[in-house]
Image (cartoon, rainbow, N blue to C red; front, side, top):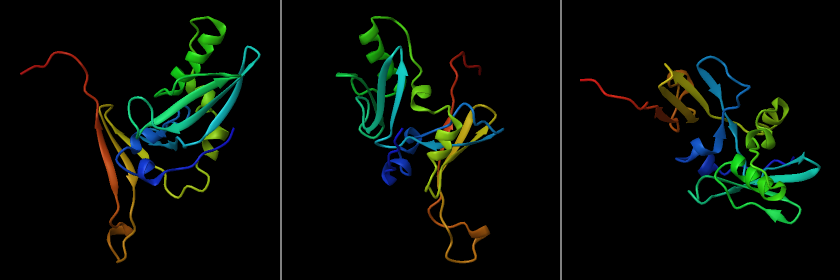
Length: 173
């Protein structure tokens, strides 16, 4: 595994939600800590006797501001995908001629406690998500420090996004 780097415009700007993940093993009530998807990060995993390398790039076919994932095995390589599962699955299916689906988050190590802890090395601030009644989430992705004796040291630079989950169904008047 090799770690990549953070891009301040992507990781702490309007596209930050795409560049941080909440691991399934790190749930803590209504506040969920987030971990970076780093540009240039690479992982290698052996599946059925073959080594697969998956790396993260800036940009994919959906957006130049979201992560791109590419998997490689020997001289075969996937297209740039918008998630790690599609990248590893496409190359795996090409090589083994099967319909098996491979979990990209496991291949990237996003379920491994030691890997996700190391992703925070030398990162001064990492976003967190506050969930409110399973419909509304607030992602805090920036924080400022007051030059004055402001409210508990808070200052300019605080940034957050509201995410509201809309469920399909019939509306009532």
